[in-house]
Length: 315
Image 1 (cartoon, rainbow, N blue to C red):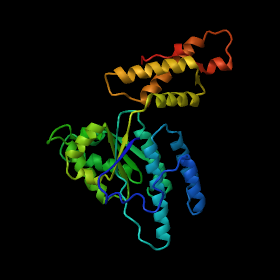
Image 2: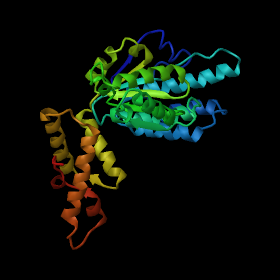
Image 3: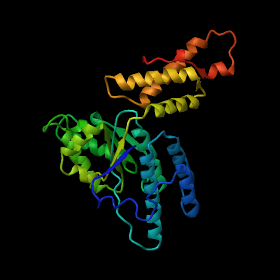
């Protein structure tokens, strides 16, 4: 992540008045542990540590990790203020996620649900992932009913709407507008009972926000997920392989680098980032199986090693 947009200074005076503004260089897990050790009354310690470990495993996304540390510190401090009988600041955690496919939006949303649950902001912390087809009905009133039902399912957790801009694509008479109106009303009426995250391509999401003057102020946090750089994509590929107990030899890394560079430079569709990498790695594992299955003597090294010949950009 390279950019964090904020819709107004007053809305995000929110984030950190009583905690560090400069994110330290150590792993986020170490920062969480340092704070947790200072406050023994933090209950869900194990869950917080697990979330921090998963954040540390995410490639890049430094600005996002800075923001999550700020939320963590802010909530801890607000809990301490409550213990001293001081006023608690009102915070809204409804968000916009902008970025291409495969940049980590859904993964981050799921981690946020667990984090906010562990800190007592959400009662359940689950993620309900939907799109336009799940919200929009077939007749007047049907859309509001379907949208309210999904909000009810998301209570205590996060409602994540992917490609949210599609709700405005049908024109003025489209029922998508009814879904937006229902969401906006529930954001206020149930503001402490669920978090709404709208996600999609950056340009389309910016256009979506301009369709309703009241929308930008409802989302105090806009996070931009940039495309991964080549070296970051290679790192992701190696991590995906390691999880399945494979490794890339030097020739495989060179071949994969060529495939990624070609896709980034000449792809005719929006680059799908980690999704593309996952598809390439999964195909390489299948090709590795075809290459080795008739070998007379299989060693552990052979079973684990992916070579250049296993990699192809084809799906």
